[in-house]
Image 1: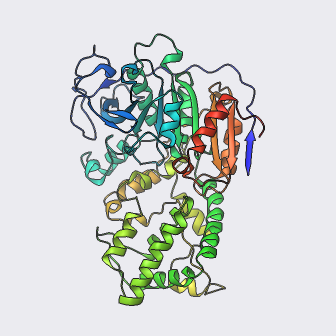
Image 2: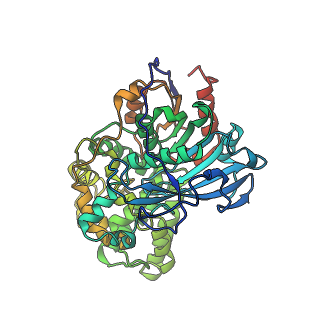
Image 3: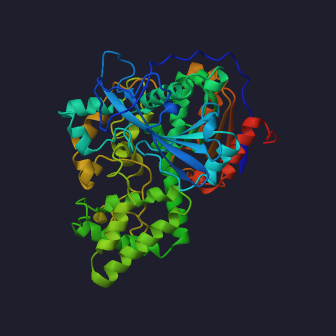
Length: 503
């Protein structure tokens, strides 16, 4: 199914806020940099620096760049800084055109995930963007990858729980966007026309949330925007998100068990075992029944059913032959869950929906307990008490819960910070609906009809709020469509060009 919403009539675009300047970094990575950090030279353009590490991959030359950005862009009196990393990729043969080629900035999903180094830019969205005339900028959003990464170790450097929570409060989309804006000004410095100083944006999932914030804050800095599976709901709190996504998760469970009916018995056996035994993972975390259910997050991606089935089959086979789960199975299960390696994905997950003084207060947990507790039950005695005690045990999706702060080894060390953030009521506004309604930036967005991460209904309402937004709704792909098929970016570029007008 494909649906195309025609753009609304456009009106005059709002002016953008002018950021402060950014300096290229010349120091070693750490979570916060002092203001005494000195650049190599303020007179040398970032693109002309000779000390930058660079190398070739098929189709492009990679430059690894670091930038020092304010921790708090809004408070000039706060002198703390964070170091932000970006991979700059120039098409092979065009290395001498860095000062003139337009940039497309890629914003990764999450929150809390870094950009990976592509093995090649001859395929996928990279090749599509290059064919459209762009050089690429892959930004590790603050708190991820090489950009002041958040972990129990790095946060401990900031002292008390209160100080740590205050620090992490600066790692939302508004701060990420302001980092990108400062980097844009550094890379495009000296370009003669206003048009040549603009950048295109491509955002996957949470990256699309960031783009919508960018459109709200700095619309005059953007030439065009492409959003894949990430048109955000314009809400003040997360509750409505989970009221929409839990029913979709139930449907995905039903589809999974229709494909693998024998997994009904296997999963029940595993859940019974995990209720009866204390299972410790190799990293010291606990594999509880409720944590095992979180493997269902893969149901939202192409190939996810198969990957979960493989883990279920392996675990059930271990229990049948040995009566316990093997180290190999436990290692694979832990590797399928990203919350320890990317802790922002848990501790800041629900805050991405919070605006105007609203706290998240573990919305997914509250909504589950109030409306979906029986469907996603994990306690074996209660499972046996259900109206159909032999019914399948359902997996959960992209949702975070307070008990994760006990079950995951790294998250245990962040428990007090996470609990504090969940109660925080100081979240400011992420989106300006007046600016979005007056938008003149060309925007193309794909929303996936069966997306269990970002509800298509909520996305459609937002797309109708953004003037000139071309929204393509399709059931051909799941949430990871951008990484699965080059058709997704190619179609979005065609939408922007007006090449597709009959949907």
